[in-house]
Amino acid sequence: MLNAPDAVNLLTIARETLLKTILPGLPEEKLYPVLMIANAMAVAAREAANWEGARNAELADLKAFYGDAEAAAGNPDERLVALNRRLARDARAGRFHGLAETRFRAVLERQVRARLRVSNPKYLTSLG
Amino acid sequence: MDLTQVETRRGLESFVARAASASSAHIISMRRLGGGAVSENWALDVAIQGSRIAGEHALVVRGDARSRLAESLTRADEFAVQRMAFLEGVAAPEPLWLCEDTAEIGRPFYVMRRATGVADPRRLAREDTPLAGREALAERLGEELARLHSIAPPRAGLDFLPVPGCDVALGRVAQFREALDALQEPQPMLEWAIRWLETNAPEPGPLVLCHRDYRTGNYLVDEGRLSAILDWEFAGWSAPCEDIGWFCARCWRFGAVEREAGGIGSRAAFYNGYERVSGRPIDAARVPYWEALATVRWAIIALQQAQRHLSGREPSLELALTGRLVPELELDLLRHIEAIDKGARPC
Image 1 (tube, one colour):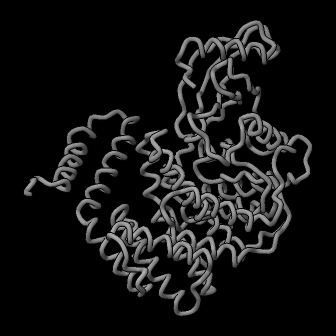
Image 2 (image 1 turned 120 degrees about the vertical axis):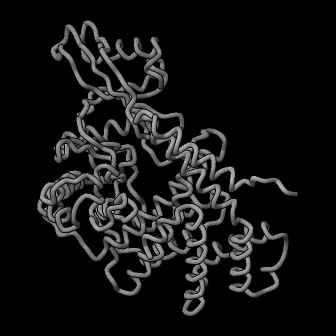
């Protein structure tokens, strides 16, 4: 179903309007809430643009990391939560050593970078 | 706590009059102060009559916000800690009167003298202060922290503060896991960092009175000089390095990452001030561990703040966005811990 303009487009233009037409006339005490609103809209727009791709990439990464049948059960959203729960449990128990630990840290870094691309891409570029 | 309500104002005026043994107290002006997700602060100018402290006073009323964090002290306990710090010569605003009777203004509160200055951490980290001013400020903050850390258990008047039963770092590890278990989403990255904190925990050392939120944003700077250390509600017995690590952690530098002491000055200046007053060297090699612990602690608090919003009890955009800070802290952690493991000095 075509539903244009889509969520990303609406959020982007709404944010631009907020920043261009509302922000300049505001008293100082209202700047902070408006900048928070603009930030929330930017995060939501980035998430809406690619949530499915990001979810599938994370799922594929976790499946490859575990590489067993348990990693493949359920619908994608449930699987993602289940795999992250397993990862968290294994991390707490200290199950990864040596090469497995290196691979595990790489999975974590990819997860964190993917989340930062949504919530604060500037932080990623500032770190290089 | 809404001091704009006539009844609340009257309750407060009659409390101040009684506490000051005055014939009357009149609120001349008041305004809500910013900050404080777990407490509410109001600046008051009060005229007191018929008392040995008759005259106009610049005060702050500090009361509970709508909800509290589990680890924060009660107002009465915070009052006692702040008073102890003040009496030991730490630059805390002088706490004057405590009111635990909720009949007065609806919540427990206390009244303290009002210090002047800027607390906004972004402004302080960005402010174009000359280097000497920054270094002097960092040094002074080190001195104040050492003065606070001279208070050790057991201490009459602070017996309500629990003395950690095992070593502090492992105690925190247990608390962090308990906090994560209470949240719905799994947190593999934080679990990994907590495991690292567990396996790399330092030998237990002496306990001192720690502020436990000693960072840029929680002190006032007036014309380049420290005027007061605020927000005592997380204070407790802990390892001195917990406060030092919290102050220096990258996540509390507000973008000025190269100024390793709270985004305002050099680590060396902060350490110098601390060591001069305490007479003890800081175990500099251990501080990066406590910075990792600080980052985990802040990430968990951020998740809890987001949960306050998500639960529907306290809808708030600020709390919601705090939850989205967590990946920054996680990337900091990953890099910081990797640097420590490689034997490099993290910054």
